[in-house]
Image (tube, rainbow, N blue to C red; front, side, top):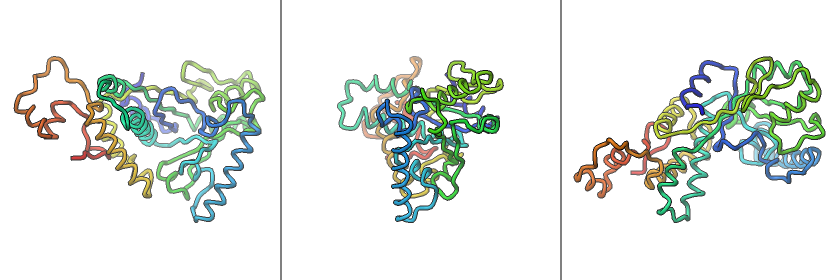
Length: 322
């Protein structure tokens, strides 16, 4: 299990990698469109479906005057596509991992739910939740692609006309359905499709897998890193994201960014109010003074934060509702 500081330090030390952040460690490198379709859909059918969506999107973007390539616009404006998002910035990847989990956690566990009896279980779940971040060595991938031009895995670089993609320093990965093996499935991980293709077409020059890491030429090509965000790391992450421009109003330079900033702040305040975004006090800490208890009962937020060890807000993009 990696620590947040380790992930950030390694990213600072090596500029060869691009990153994809996920809210759950179980998430694999499978696009939304593939997850929505039946598992036995062939790549030919998958390609037809994808092309229909792309043509409809191109027509629509032209009608409303949106600039940029249709694939990137569709991916960054919420359509289900055959692409996966990546970023040159580890902070952008961490932003998406963290905020996506907050939104889903609140939706699944708090909204319209009776959570009183399971608050402590939810707090434990929130504090010990496992996220993941993928890092792909783009420099090594370019070497691999140069040696094997027929690789089924494709990377599309940032489309600067797409304002969201530009702000997120984004890239897209996809599978060229015309180049996959016959046994390939649309719900297979993109890295597995690549590894199987190399194994079939160049058995002497395959990807070596060790756990969640794939290597080529004795260098890491792709690695899946699992991590937790205990309270100290959550507070540190919020500060890091703001300092490095990975906040909603920058990554979504339109009304959506404003909306996300307010909604994420609202969700975080809900988690604090329910004492879920919270860390238990150590056993040796002093008992709460009667004066503090009275101030807490009267809604003194500073005393509440101090005594209950709720997550800090205000140093990052999320703001307290008080």
